[in-house]
Amino acid sequence: MEPFKQWTCDVCGKIIDNSEDAYVVWGTDESDKIDKMRIVHKNYRHEDGTLTGCDLDQKTFNRSLPISAFLGGAGIAQLLSLIDPGEMHTSECRDNIADMRMFVEMFRRFQIPYYEEARLCLPKAFAQGFLCGTNEVATYVPDTLKAVIERYKD
Image (tube, rainbow, N blue to C red; front, side, top):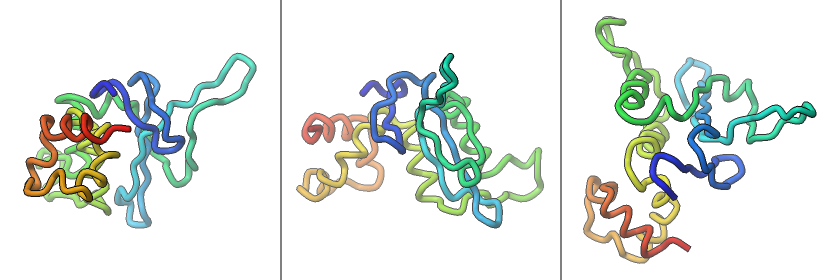
């Protein structure tokens, strides 16, 4: 997979070959905190009226943006604003994320080179001791992730 150009769809499991074909959808819990995010194929309406893509329940996943909104420096600003819009906009930090681990996982998928492909291999790499001795940072650096892909990609 090419970093920041291809992703795995969280609905169908197939590769999204082009960032223009990917959307990020998310939903909130009863207290309006983000508790779910997915990367999905963009829905397209064909000339015959048929719809293709990987749709999720729009009541559950009621917010969306193109994946490009979450990439690069502008993407970091977008992601951080979901945690806290900043003191210029609100006097106190808003706690907008219900599931921080889910949020950090998505942040890595958008911002760390090779993470999107390596994340599917990480459980096997850990189970087989390949990452034994790596700390919480070293596991996620691009060189480590590339090594995981080279060794464990099917």
